[in-house]
Image (cartoon, rainbow, N blue to C red; front, side, top):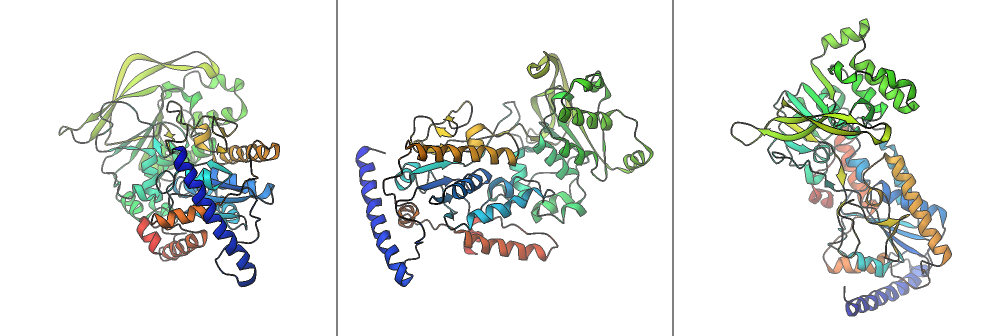
Length: 495
């Protein structure tokens, strides 16, 4: 934005704010204009971009810690909660209970939710900076890391992010329609998301139909021909990235049995004593599933199982092999690795051997990545994060970040909570020290709302979301589910 344009924007927003201030005075006597009178005009106004866990946790800490701060959360979708809604597996409802905490934050007197607002398109970051004392970028990681191998554009190859979005009702993935007509699926990556995908592919439909999985995904999985899922990683059993909870769910999944290569576990038992407790417990469970002779009850379960899953270690994708018509995936070629080094410094090195696996479905679960949101915001394209120091965006006063866009797409929801609280503390420290100037009058949401109205954008309030929530719950009840998610943004806005 040029200096001249920035000056005009400041003048425009100041006029909007003064108009709003007159309305505030009127509301004290007449209750008109619909503006809150509880927050003084000079109070710190903070804008958060992103209505997922990072955004809500940042807002929670701000409104609870300082009694005069006003927080507005802007989210591109009409619905809040980000990856809690669209990323957490349908059969993990206990993880989604955090939505109750987020709802309390959204209903706080000094916090407002504005959905259906695309920052960077409907309103720029610079315009938000003119309207608020501070802007916190908490918009997560919408991009996919690619494999970078021939054939990854073939039909039948998907990113785990898109596959998860498909069964969780993310509007942009509703048309994915994965082909599940093959017998073997290969998942590349061995983290929790990879195991979520494997579990969805192999879970009995009777279990899934009681969750909030989308109906179109449930119907597709009911007709799925997938009977075997291989979960492939480039390093060994001691470096597997999933948690013990996710592994235990795979081991105990009804109607399935583990199928692993005993040779890949040679020498692993001897290392157990030297492992830290979490890694030791995880490795013990992995060894039990892979090579221990099962007891009578477990043996009977495995003999009855019609579906199988297994880890494949020391493998790296080289190429997705095409079908004879060159249209879709028919297999995957893997490089065989060996490990060099010790401890944290261990690395996978190619041996020169290759292995072909026949499969019709390839799902890449090698990580998400954040994307730039606005040319005015610094962005490290190599690390796919906003460069920052303790949440302060480098070389940009008044701009902060939290969550995955701050540190990269790692950790669980609790990790994001602590990270977001840290950013909120940094922001409040800057206010306390005077390095973040909150003495100037800022219009906040009043100024932004006027810009959005002029541009034909209709924000969705939290009470509007509650109407969508109520309708989804009603639709779910008719099917015996917690909810049936709406997949179309237009329908959400109509409701």
